[in-house]
Length: 615
Image: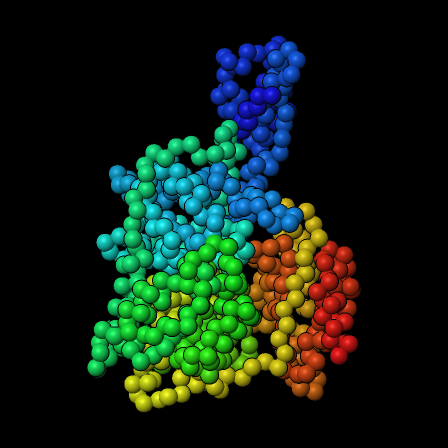
């Protein structure tokens, strides 16, 4: 049965569509489908099918489900989806056709923002996921269809994609990275860069809206044409040279300038992602001993563990290798190397708050009094650590793009801000284009490690955070929203606003909305009080928890997940059993009392309570 799908963006009354249906059978060979494409109502996909008997054509009105498929691929400032089969209950939604439409829309968006008369150049990189090759071709097709020049970087890192827009002689106008970070091999995604950095959530939303219209209007949902074949470039070699030059220049070793890492053993765990280059193209060429490094070869099935500095297996394997070989430092990268974590020479994992503290110690020595921006899940102890070193600590919304953009805004407003870092390991430095680059973070740590050694210290980088206190208890729980996917975000916001009202009305005794300097939670977690506030991409609140005997004893952070239809509940307590009491109050005095438990899967909450009470 022949089928042609048509749609339009021209507004026409929905009830007038029936007037377009002819009263007699039409010859599909001569019928002007372009007319129907122009005339169909906005939001309606007109599907014309040849009937099995008599050759008659009938029209059906369908909701813009195809457009919705593209819009649902947006995850904050990224695009993410299922690229290959293999996930139970999840169908493939990041198809080649979807990727082509999104890439073309990004390219057109770039063209509109550039001076006329010059062709826009866009580089494309990918991590080793097994879907990367096919989706790269779709990106090439989309960018080429828009009329842009395409440059194929091949296997790359996310930070390298941005750097390809600023490092000469490349200096492309924009870049696209195909990656889904630490997610399973079945997933993939897209990250977008211009010379000013990564795109914001509203910008990616605009691009996905454009792509949705393109996708719904295309009869053939596959890439069919590469107007301009991509030019292959070896940018990773130039990027590696850039990192090597920084290390040599800043260490300025008095005895061996070109091999400043001679005598140091550094173990890298790349997790079979894109980070192996850092071993053979950076460390080895600077004289480091990298024997004992783990999982350097790219493998898009990630057979050993999730490439993620927050992953316990990744950190424990790296710790074991550091101790076995007596190494000076261990490094863990995520898949696309925009995040990292380290292990000191004593085998102590340094990630999360500890990594932020380590970077803060380094940055505040170089830039006394600087502000450090983090997400609002960091500990009270980290604030104390930063302020004890003369720095300022700004707590801001969860989401690495939010944290980085806040730092950029503060620095532009005259508040010196050199470090922005999220507990996930995303960290950006003013000196490095405000770019979250896991390799650059490690470069800073290595330079500090060598500097300490040259000054006669044998303590290692772990000594820089020896006075960082750890919270007695720290817990994260997730509550899935029970709703149709298209309504989950709206329901999540409703629940979070109800939570805010309960706190403000004093229904949870000892709980108060938190604030940080000029940033207040009362409008959606640390909203900007300036002339150009950033739009809120996910609703969230941070609460201080007090008791009558001990004063402030912890905090609660409830947020809407950017990537999944759930709420995330984080809490920390300085009292033994404090998180148990916080969770009990959250369940009994909010979830049950408000009736919100009817719209949430509270299994993790119940499991946590039952497990702790059984001890």
